[in-house]
Length: 222
Image (cartoon, rainbow, N blue to C red; front, side, top):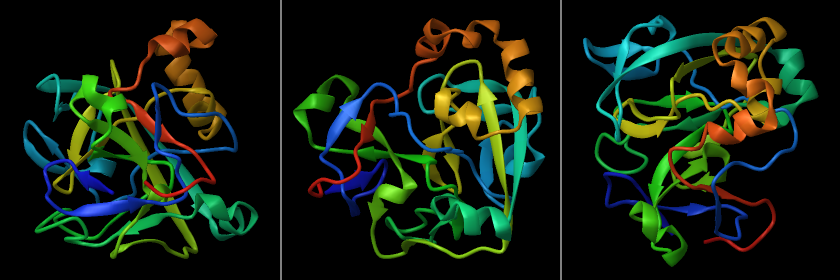
């Protein structure tokens, strides 16, 4: 069992062997991001994620106020979800992890990662916190939902950060092989122009995750 950071409530990780990795594994196209209507806590108060702009300062768990350096959007239509159902959004109902956690119903992409607390010695160096993809959280009020189409919204800081979205801690965009393949060519080029080091494997490895990432596919629950 795991607890959402800042909550006494617990959730189960579905089909995970419970191991931590500093970076996510590589596989199918994945787009970790928010959907419109999610409120991000910024210096000027809660802001719909689709209105967050480069230069806005967001509240982070580790580094105080940090500026957003890039934002992007990816449009998905019914035919996209029919062809790649693993990209369907995950609904997290209001209060799924405790009172006002989250503060309202929110949807994220299945690979978007939430901050959780896990009582594992392997995570001792980070205070028992890890990032877990929404698709791996099985709790009452958390489920994959059908969609005829949605917009996945991304934003990025100079480093991978943990930020508040609808009152729960979650991640900013982290560029890696999977996430860069999940966005359009134009957006990928924008990021690579801003961060030329990301063109190399060494550069990608240097943009480290803010927390260990719990990874796995078909194993016993934690």
